[in-house]
Length: 155
View 1 (cartoon, rainbow, N blue to C red):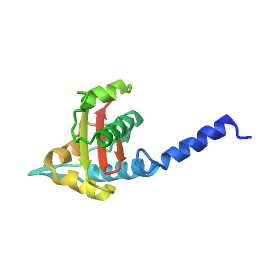
View 2: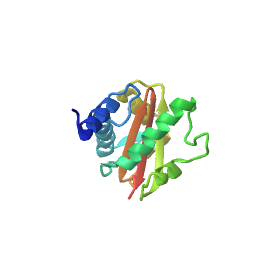
View 3: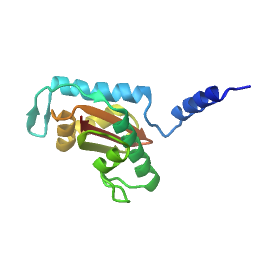
């Protein structure tokens, strides 16, 4: 007979394999590595060179807010930082218990993998500057289907 703890672990593993994406170890590692590589080398955002800055740390609360926003945009077929219910990135992160402040959000849609999303964000001055912001200390990210969300915060 399967114990309850084994069943919970099995269900968690099955949920992690769901086709809609989410917060997998791969996306956590790959997104954090991609953003921190950019931050450590510096880059030009629009006409402004952004010098190297400190790497970010992963934050699970920001990641959950990012994933929930990606799910919401996918489920309700919209693309905006403000949800149809009127919630902003800072409201969504605070509702999940994020204790930091200065939340910035990058969103994208229409991309099936990380590399093209990162390239698009680097080519967009505002998105690029969000990734290079020296005031940010933490990152969380999630994706559902072709929707991608990065949440940056400072603790």
